[in-house]
Image 1 (cartoon, helix red, strand yellow):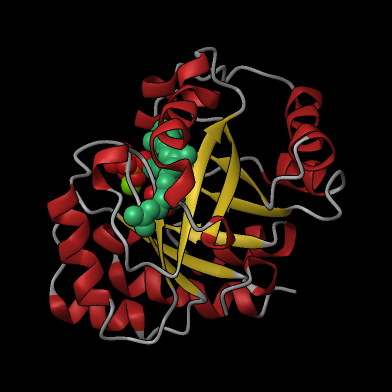
Image 2 (tube, protein in one colour; image 1 turned 180 degrees about the horizontal axis):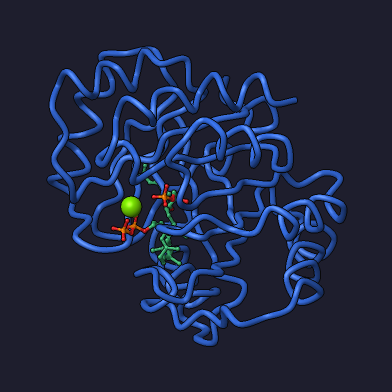
Length: 230
Ligand SMILES: CC(C)=CCC/C(C)=C/CC/C(C)=C/CC/C(C)=C/CC/C(C)=C/CC/C(C)=C/CC/C(C)=C/COP(=O)(O)OP(=O)(O)O
Ligand SMILES: O=P(O)(O)OC[C@@H](O)CO
Ligand SMILES: [Mg+2]
């Protein structure tokens, strides 16, 4: 399952957080479609390599969501490259990407690299603060970013990001109506099966992150909840 168009659910593990072998076993054997390694801060080559080696014992697809150049390493099934469409700082839209491609472009295997068009909507989350995202925007603004991602830039993924907070289901529904080819990822604040099912009905793929560290038992239930939601 290396094609995101076939996914419904993914867990996102933060390399900057501790996880026991027992918890990791439950995550990797949960039936989720993929495990994404990613976070905004404290992501180092060392903690990425550690997590990758431990996940590699399982067959679940393992993806690195790149948040800085220093922690990129071979060995992942896919690499997701975020670009924050609603950032006011060109650095987070195309700046770091330009530097990276200038340096490593010749070496990159483009078949394993997928660009994620992010729209970050929780003003209090680290990713919004780090990237200077404009979070107070209308549904039409968000829909326009979704159309840009699909129709202008042909991005494989549009990511509605509420990291740390449960988002607005009506906005997710609205955005989905604008996407035909691009896969809609929803992530943020999913703590219960009910929330997972609700967002699972509206988005193509639901990402569960913090709940892994806060309530593993509930987090594991989100896999089935999303999969039965459509
Ligand atoms: C050797 C080898 C295999 C080479 C592969 C080549 C390759 C993949 C090259 C990459 C080339 C490239 C274009 C690199 C640039 C990548 C880059 C650094 C882009 C910038 C990324 C970016 C915009 C980061 C901003 C933050 C962000 C959107 C992070 C995504 C994750 C996220 C939102 C996490 C949620 O936050 P979290 O940490 O969970 O918050 P809490 O701790 O509060 O929960
Ligand atoms: O950590 P949570 O709030 O579940 O969000 C998941 C993911 O979208 C973070 O990038
Ligand atoms: Mg997190």
